[in-house]
Structure formats: C-alpha cells, structure tokens
Amino acid sequence: MSTINATSTNGLTDEQLDFREAIRDFAQREAGTAEQREKLTDGYTELHSQEIYEKLAKLGWLGVSIDEEYGGAGQGMVDACIFLEETARGQLPIAGYGVSLIVAGAYERFGTEEQKQEMLRGICDGRVEAIAMSEPEAGSDVGNLKCKVERQNGSYVLNGQKTWISAAHIADHILVIGRSDSSGSKHEGLTMVSVPTDADGVEINGIQTMGGKEVNDVFLTDCAVPADRLLGTEGGGWMQLMAGLNVERLILAAGALGLAQRAFDDVLDYIKERKQFGRPIGTFQTLKHRIADLATELECTRLLVYDVARKVDADPSQMLPREASMAKLKATELVKRCSLEGMQMMGGYGYASEYDMERHVRTSLVMSIYGGTNEIQREIVAKTYGL
Image: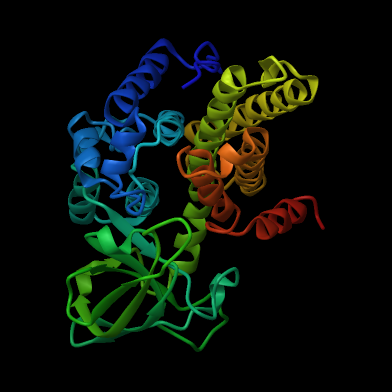
C-alpha cells in the first residue's frame, strides 16, 4: 500500500500520530495481504471478523473515545476518527464498530449508571451493539415510525418490523426506537428500548446485498423486555435520537474517508507499475491530473472531517447540523469518486475480483445512502442557511 499520506499530520499530536501508526502496523500485520483478507471475511462475504475485533479490544482501541471509568481510554472524537479512518484504510473487517460507537454515544448521553457499566464496558471488551431506526415505511422520514412499544405489567412489549439494521446478526442487543404514544405529532411518543438479540419474539433475517452480510430485517413479535431496558425517558426518543445523529454522521464520514484513501492508494500503486506504450501509465498527463485532483479532494475532506471532530471534542453538546452533514456528504461522495475513478484508471483489472478495487466500488456505493441519504444531508445544510 502506498505511504503517500504518511507525512500528513493534519494537526495531530505526537500521541495521536503514534496511535495512527500503531493502527497501520496492526492492519498491515493482520490484513495486509489478499489471502489474509479473504480468510478473515470468508471469501469477502463477512464484513466483520470477531477474531480481529477482540484483538483490537485487548489493545484498548475499541474504547478509545469511551470514559476510563467504563473501561475506555477517555479520548475524544478526533482519536475515534483516527481509528475509523485507519481501520477502513487498512481493510480491517470490523463492520460492527461504527454502529457500536453510535450506540455508545446514546448510552453516554442518556444511560443510567448501571446501563453505562453494562453497555459501554461491553463495547470496550469487544461486544457488538446495533441500533434500529428504519422501517419499511420510515427511512428518510424517521418520524413515521410505527413499531409499537407498549408498557405492560412492568415490562415493555414490542411489535413491528425494522429493516436495514446494520450488524443486528452479530450484536448482543439492538437499541430499538419505537412508538409508545400515537396521540401527538409524529415526533412525539417515540421511545428507545434495548432488546437482547436472543430475547423471545426477536427474529433476525439477513438481507442479501452486493456488499456482503451487513444489514438485516428485524421482526419483533410480542417481544417483552424488562422496564429497565428503557434508555432515557419514555416518549423522549425523538430528541434523544436527534442528539446523536450529528456524531453518527461524523462516524460515517471518517470511515468513508479511510476507504477513499485506500482506493486512492491502491490505484496509485497500480499506475506506477502498469506499463503501456513503453512507460508507466501514471506518467501520462490524463492520469497524473486525475491523481492530483483526487489527492487534493482527500486532503480537503480530511481537514473538514477532523475540524468537525475537534468541534465535537470542544463541546460535545453542540449539534453541528451543518458541519456534520457537510462532512458526511463530502466524504461519502468522495469515496465513490475515488473508487469509480480508480476502477476506470485500472481498466479491466479494476473490474476483476483479483484486485480490491471492485470491492471498494461495491462498498462505497451504499455510503451515500445509509445514515441519512446525501439528498437529506443537502436538505439539512440548505436549511441552516434559511432555505
């Protein structure tokens, strides 16, 4: 892999640069060859390797942004973005991490002490957690949720279907956002409840996708969980959800940035070696200029992502709707561009499964859809300008 970005410090401290290098070394050691990556992913069908995940947990890296009192390292979102970017760039199959970090944020903001000890420590130790928002009739329109959450005899009983739920098949719990009251507006009466994936009444069915085993339908049928599985306040789910969406977008942006950098690294290595007409194809102006444009876009996007992360660390209570949506929009559009242009520059080899580029393309295409489509991100940004 190219080391083109190795000297770019982007304002990181010496400790953060050391952390970045340690992740790169780990990724190179554990997943540096195509043979290693194929084995870890069962022929590129599994997006999460629990073996690798637990190794990262033992190093203390899964809890990099979680408070020390819950088993974490007590760092912030800049360090989390370093981890997200570099694990994506290093092609470490840990698809459960991003969503687990999103769930961790919800418990950090609204969990009881007992819940924090259970969930945050579990994430630091290598447990995967999932969150369920989308339903068949509620995607971008999150407020249109219909899944029922009813209080019965000291428990919460859930009925309904959730869909496109990332990592549900490998998670210990699913944080379900459902409707506990239909008497008010669609943004009122939503409630968050943590449901163990082995609870009675839970059925998880994988959805086949071009990217591998990633998302699931979750069916809840008279699923009863103890009342202490409530997160935050009953009926307060909308505000609790909104409080975390901007950090979620930052998490997605950092991962997309890492994959964009990997696609760039891979095509750069290729065009330096591939020869046509008696010289490396990277010496032709049409490819040199493409590389220059992509490199510039990568650095601009990296500055944006880490600027948002620093703003979050400076004041975690900030919502940052404009900046977080810009970061998610920019990074996920860029990763598509890097992978698609990488495929074009590699020609037929970019389309061949022998190389990683075709997998980069398949992975990148969905990034502008999940976590709020990029059309929604543009609407949010425009709204902050009074439009």
